[in-house]
Image (cartoon, rainbow, N blue to C red; front, side, top):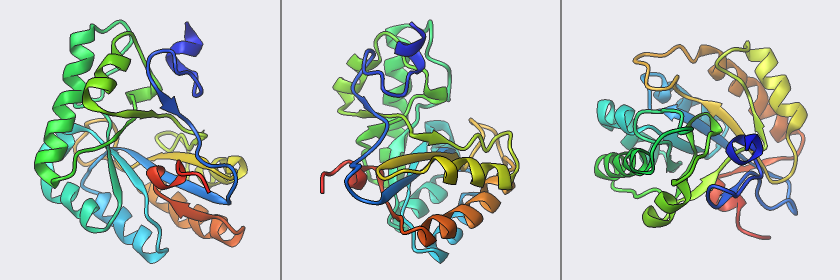
Length: 217
């Protein structure tokens, strides 16, 4: 059961991917839990390095900061669904899970004009009923190749963890929020991005959105 719920390669509770095309030296940089009050600083940093990323957004954060959510789209990044209130799905009802996905989908679409096609479960936890909800809302599940643990590590540790495990087709998971917390401190994430992106670019990696990295060469 643990593999079904948390295994990055598990498709038991719904279609899901954790890496893209391994045939080219590309990475997908992803950010969960936004938008937050510090997302604009992250957008400036990504623009500096000419990197497009994928943002898995929580519905309540989008409703609180619609202008920030729109700015992510305006900067030509990809946006995706990360549930409405960022709960753990284990032991939740099918109706609860569907409502979380549907509410986020509605809030993101209303705020940005974009209807997400990708979904990431909060905490990477999948459960019964998720596959049906994904199918009804036309959402593909996305896990990760490496997660930076940027909610607990310092910038140098985050950067080392991500760069050490980066591989062609990898999906990298960081965070531009902390669940649905207001004004979260993501300073270590920002510092880590400033360190790891140029390092990986120097190693010959290019950055793509998740949708792009899933396309075969």
